[in-house]
Image (cartoon, rainbow, N blue to C red; front, side):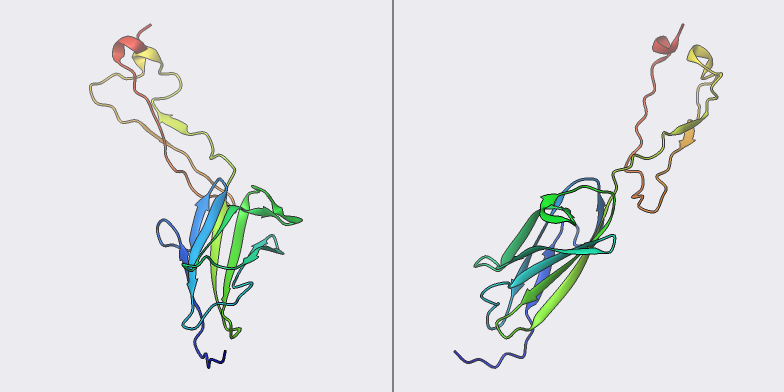
Length: 173
C-alpha cells in the first residue's frame, strides 16, 4: 500500500461536561475517539502518559476499537507500577497521543485534581454557643449563618453544606 498522508489524526476526549480539567475524590476513566483520513497505526495508535509529582509513566499503549474508540479505566495509577491503581491526593496530568500509519501524531492533555482531604468542619456563627434549646431562637424570623472552606494547594472546594432545623417541640427542654 502506498498513500501520501499529510493529515494528522483527530483525537477527542469524552467527558461529562466537555472540559479537559476536573476534580474528583475517586478513581476515574479516560475515554475518547481517534480517527484518521487514511488509517491509524496498526499497533500503539493510542498512548496515554500519566504525570504526577514529576513522575511520568505510560499507563496505556494500544489500538482503538473498530469504531475508533479507546478507554483506560481505574486511573490514577501508581508511579512505580502502572498496573496498580492508587488514589493519592494531587494533580494528575494525562497526555493522550493518537498516531496514524504515516507516524503523524496528535495529542491532548487532561488534568485531574484528586482531593482526598475533607473540608474543615463548618463553624456556626449565629446562634451563639450559649444559646441552646428553646433559647436558641428568640424571634419569629432568624437568620442562620456560618462558613466552611476547603483550603490548601490541592483543594477542590466545598461540594455542599447540609443543615437541619428542628421544630420548636423537639428543641424544648
